[in-house]
Image (cartoon, rainbow, N blue to C red):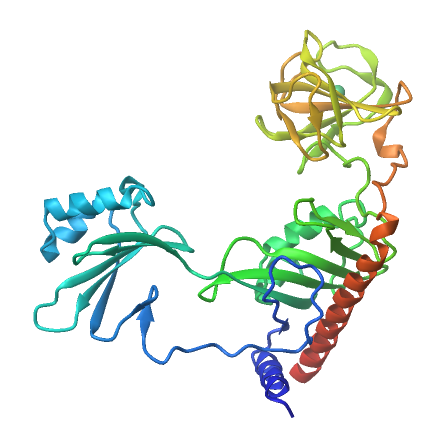
Length: 428
Ligand SMILES: [Zn+2]
């Protein structure tokens, strides 16, 4: 048995013991989509032979760590260690090209590194500007200030979880970034009805990319592939031709999971009044038709363009209040009324999901809401009853690389499912 395989088995065994459903694969090339790495590899932690901190070898030094307190300045931190105003001044000047000392904030960690002898001469001061950047001040002549970056490690992981309640909590319990639940919600917004289709005992299997700095999660995890198994099976695979393009999610056949239109112009909303040919108008106090759908939401909630298009009108009328009308193509137009604030200009190109305004109650409105109107071939229709077109499918010339990529993700999903199965059987 090779060293790698042995480590893999030990790793999987430990994961099983810990009851974690997490299976770890390693991807050290963060910007490549297709990585035909062996599936089961676990990297050993590299423990340096001699201790070091921030890349500074600590032999012959002692380190003292702390957190910047409220109101504490750079010189407050250094003065007690015999570093006077002139030296502080020089350090501030040396730092200026790489770090503005006024950007030091309370709560951030710092470290002072002294010589390990009776004189305890302060040699370095390190300020952690964020999880990645730390500013290293060399205090002894020749004085120097530089910014070092901690390495960001990117790993490809997979996890398979049975739905017990909120997906957010299930992910957290499994040790995965719970933000994946939100991403899943966005990707499957046209595919799954989360209230109806997702039931306890159903299974979600994720393949995702996680970034860590010194073992701590850094930034958001990226969702590469998902499989849902319930009354139906649904899959999504992320695919990007090049890194400049926004990633798109396709099903196994290469159909876009995105429809040309969002279901609603607000992320979280409630329909307060549907599309109807006749209703009693709450302000005008008479029966009239309502050729739109009202979504109630708090003032200031972002209003999203439901599809790609061009802003045809952005203005004000007594009835509409502040409103925006978007032409999506030769067939479809949409309109958004009663905005508190308009955030686009006439003639502007907009993308699906882009914020175009804020919820308000301008014009004829009793409370904060968006009146959303939808035209098909110049006729106002109820968008909730329309069969909406899909976004463009995968281009033919990308099919081969997509399929390679998809098969690799599928293999990882299957591995994670098997592992979860094994762990859950072992628990009984
Ligand atoms: Zn309305």
